[in-house]
Amino acid sequence: MEDAISNDLDLITITQLRQVANQAAQPYRLHLQVESRIEKTTSSGSPFFEVKLVDAGDSLVWRVFDNNPLFHDAAKLARNAFIQLAGQWVDGKYGLEPRQVQMRSLSEEETMTLLLGDPDLAARQKADFAEIEAFVDSIRDPRLLKLCLLLLERYGERFRRTGAARRNHHARRGGLVEHVAQMMRCAVAVAGVYPHLNRDLMIAGVLFHDCGKLWENVYAESGFTMPYNLTAEMLGHIPLGLELVNKLWRDLLELPEAADWITLEPASETVRLHLLHLIAAHHGTHEFGSPVLPKTPEAIALHHVDNIDAKLEMFRRAYETGKELGTGIIEKFVPWPVNIVAPLPQVQLPPAE
Image (cartoon, rainbow, N blue to C red):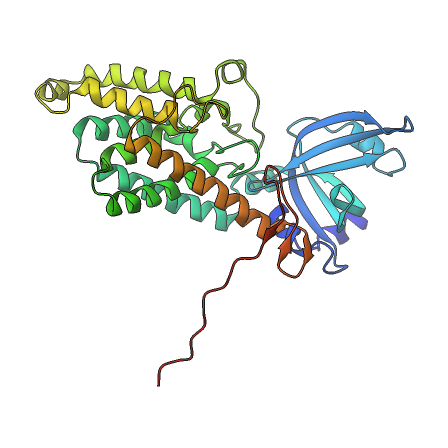
């Protein structure tokens, strides 16, 4: 009977839950995947489980203490399992916490529906990917155009399920598509204001700047977990990106049309080096992992475009999910060092007579 009642509750995502938690006593149900389950102990020595749960757009940590009726059920949760949690939710001491919660496994049909992702998010990512393809098609340099097309052809499916990060910004399945699309829109706008910038190189640089994350931050084919792997852990996405570009470039030079590029200026080798430099320098400083500092106009522009999009995404998420300390004041978030303030709205002018 309880299960039947829980199935009548509204089904929402983690992101939607953050917006309604504490606002009403209405219970909700969530469909989730188990990313990890870690057994820990409290300061008094009592055992508890820290269960990380994910869906297409967000994640939460469910702490199950030994006085919870579901403690022994939580002990049996397997990594990558698909479950439903139904109950009342509050934004408590440890973040989102379910109260009087019921848990069950998802059916195969429910699992497949969950894997399709949030419809609105999926639609936005589909539109973003189409815009990436359109920007790539506008590249005039035949070498950069073919290189970008080769990446999308070989790794497009992998690209669609890669996050832009594990934390902080666009840390979700398909987040890299969102990040790259917005960066391309910004980079093209900047190139329009500063026409001495190489627009083709900027577009290609945006596409490839985080291409190493296709291995570092790729999600599982049938889930919302982002597994760790030894290659990415030991090398990182910048060296992996440099290696990928060099591999694709070698393949590019074996194509029949490559013979027509010998007389092009700038020379192909120079083009390759400039693209590699954008990847190597895009973090901007040695402190943040760049092996070299930006040494070209495109490199410094790309670094700031990347930084702008990452930071504004952090702010967007904080406004959406952050804790309000006072009117228009939102609690600071990792890695931001200070509380943030609500932005100034656009002026609302009276209609012209």
